[in-house]
Image (tube, rainbow, N blue to C red):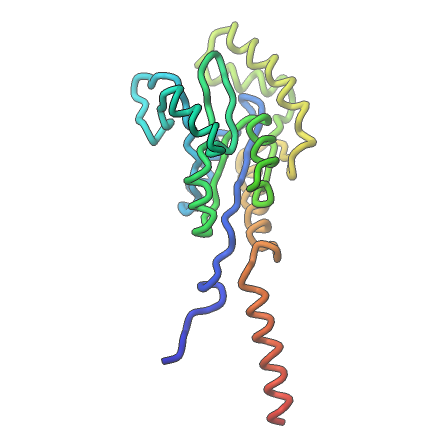
Length: 225
């Protein structure tokens, strides 16, 4: 019986690790949600944390809630792609689910800051990373967006603005940088980047076998003519 499996079916591409970073208010989370709606095969990386769940938060959906000992064990056994301590609690990205998605040819989307992005780029999985930094069109617009959310006090807004200066200073570490002046345009640019990265020759393991097959066809045609 003839094997009808195509080279692409037999050897799917390796999944990407798509990192989105930005200062608070630049649109990173909104663009992440739009990307997930655009491609339902995208896997969103759910972070692990040692902090207690807040009202309405669901384990495995908003965070993977863990004990400090459990989190520490994952760090000790190199099972965290990135991690940091923030206000006395640990946060990080578990490695196992990411590697499983990569093996299945599924891309994983990370909504993380520059420090987390740096750790993942320097990890053994760094070759699969596509990092994208989102900039606001201006600092005035960034502050305006933070205020428009009506979620934070003046003190928190001032703190986020101070943190934004440090966050933006790391823009040159990323593969791509987008200015989110128009949300629809920024989304379209993100999709273009992801489609191009998926099509890279180095990410298509089936191509070597496929092109050898084409060369064999030429050889057979030459001997039969």
